[in-house]
Image 1 (cartoon, helix red, strand yellow):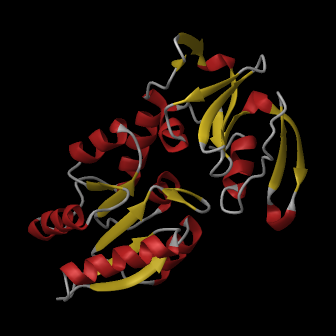
Image 2 (tube, one colour):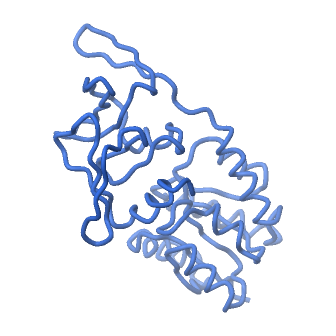
Image 3 (cartoon, one colour):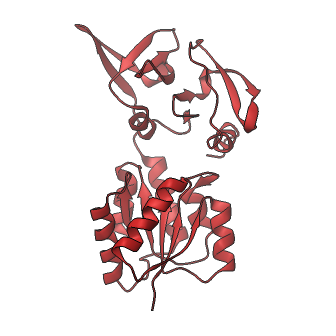
Length: 256
């Protein structure tokens, strides 16, 4: 019987790449659908037979895998594609569910598919239970509290509480402190995003991670985006990206 796979990924190019790798590794398997959001995936699951396997991205256009797993009534085994920290990976291991760190490598996908093929194709626990466990892990995670930078021979340490926002300028990541100081960092925004408390910081686009306290004013912008006036003032314009704007609105209202 053909193994049917559902791919849930909000970046079309990544979804196509995953689909190509799966069918390349398992020519007799079928990609039964590719969905991009929590809403679209729930609608598909409600109107179609359960797939045998789901490849699920953690970050989706209108929410997260947590939202999807808490609402899904199916018990389909899941292989996660994620950039999340160790707390999530531990949860996946405990529950015998696989995960793949982005960018997904062909050999790692092959190992995950082989692991799935060797099992009885039943998840270790109900997906809603996993969602609750992951959310608990998220709440318990230890976030970055202090940072250290070196400029020339000078070393400076500062508290995350002093940071107003992080941004990229001239291909360098800077921390802008509340007192107006601008400090260059060795970390990328991707690395920072996973180390910062999401209740306090939000990544509005590829260039900015802002704190709630850094928001001076906000204005409606084209394509449902939001322009943010930051304090202290930044020389780079800060506008939420189209795909991040719905999540930004949720974050602003406390639904994160």
